[in-house]
Length: 315
Length: 315
Image 1 (cartoon, rainbow over the protein chains, first blue to last red):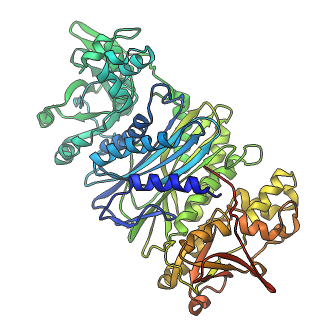
Image 2 (spheres, rainbow over the protein chains, first blue to last red):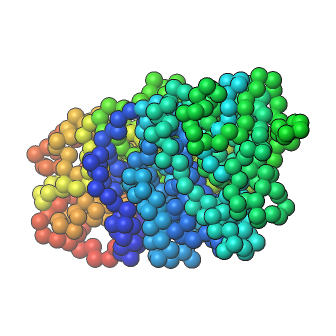
Image 3 (cartoon, rainbow over the protein chains, first blue to last red):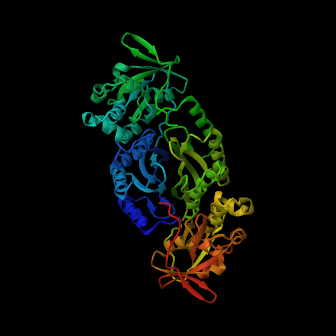
């Protein structure tokens, strides 16, 4: 199906915006496929989709935000495998209302993030959408030692690389039209940062990392995956890393509840033996895996079992 | 964002349908990313999206058809680079109306094709869609020598690997509710076959292939890309490979017009020197590149310039 001359021009503009000089490129963007020399180590791939009115709304997410976030959530998957990012492909189902300048801002948001981590946008697809915006990004990275979700042991500590619940606080601020009051929370929600900065530390201590994943669905839901239904977990709410915005925004859910159930922080969760905890000084201890099953909130004065599991549905 | 237990079950069912034993797998489907040992040669990636009511309609395309076609169009991009396919990731924005059995048929269609070429579905995403089905597939393949779109020379023959216009005839049959009369055309439209079977022949003669691409947007539009606005082209309509269905369906457009303008046949187009034409005995000569610019239809009794370019828009 043919593109009109104007549409070719749009595609040319995108190409010139995203294309970089990359010593791995054999055949650049613009052919039937992109061809590259293999990166050293193992290859890691991931692919994540964002759907209008499911994952975002166009009234609060800008084109720049969406370009950033749709790549960020994918790069977060690479970080969660202990991998560096190299390549991205992006497909867009694009409603008519979105203009050429929207598209340019989208790719500017994406490449601004991509450039920070040496990632190049090398392909994808651009389609008309009769109904709503859909963004689908795939990424290609590499690592020497993949760090998987499987391997947490009883007694291991559960660490997180940074604040939890902040993205949910930001979403609340956006929905309540209070975004200027909680700028960090809003930035976390709209432009989360993939923790690729931690990859060197993770690879250096790879043999000590028992399990690793990114926290996209909330602490409870994600750490449940790390237990593999074979371990229990004690969570330490008093030790949760809570940003000031998360504490101050108040509302229907408390800061603790936001940390427990709120998704999309894109921090990393790690299971590590207490003996090796010192290798990760900047990470916060938020729980400990136990031999006996069940997930508990441990307060100073007792513990409370989490028996109902909630969260947002995306399918 | 959390999946409910029932949704986890659906995802588990998909995983068990698609997962294969693959000696390249280091970390299988089900972690943050899929990890694999590099394949030999260069890596080739592509990503193509299909949007409901733009690329297909659910009243005539079955779940099985869409699983097949969304992968086929991507594998066709690999064939068009002279590459074999290895891995696929698929993202779906899925409207509520589509049931679990629809989803199962979709993956059955996809894996039936994938298995034929040793391709494995190793990841992707599954999202709710408030409005319409969107399918986005990315593929990973490899080749020793990439075959690009650039390199056609004046005097080169334009060859096609098979019938042109057949997919358009199939679409017409579907729209006119005459699908039982034109089964080959309908099959070509709903379940096009990527020409990965030609990859060994193409790689064996790689140094003789001046330019290669797949024919997805119609002969005129695609061969225009091969000219790079630096060459002209004479097309030989009397030599076009036309399937009986294309000739017999009649309608607003003739069989020749379907071959010239109709898209989605997913045959390959090649530019090759007349001296090497014998290396590709099963391919049909449909044109010849010329030094002087312009695209012409050459009949027994003269030639006619193509001055207006038409086709379907997809963006």
